[in-house]
Length: 185
Image (cartoon, rainbow, N blue to C red; front, side, top):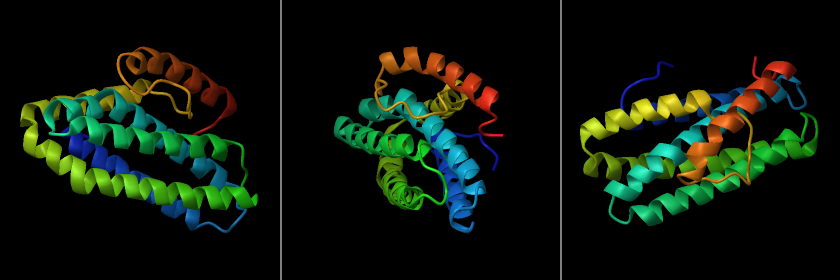
């Protein structure tokens, strides 16, 4: 899918790509080794997406949306839960009963989070945030995803300024590890 547009369009495209990765994992026979490759790709996409939202979307929600602090805090809690599951999934292989169970739990959690964002948070943000700011946030999110970590780091900070300072360094280390191991190819 082509990326671009404002922050809502960008993140919605990410959501559809994640849906597709879940479908591809589920479409393979249980224990198929390709599930590991797809789970790694799913992890990479979810982590980059989450980091970009934490750096740029949720601060905008706090700024522009009434009760934005509560909304952003709830979304951050969702991210923390997903990141813990992704970390656990790293240690599982297809064919391990935990693998399928974790993928199913992860899909349920991510689907609920996506539905909440698309049906509640995005409309509130679109209503309260100037269109030019939404466009600028889209650019910032795309830029953040390029340097974001590709592996789960559940103990890492998820709010500014610490997340903006630490994420690029963790991202660089993750990409070097990915390159050396062939992960994500």
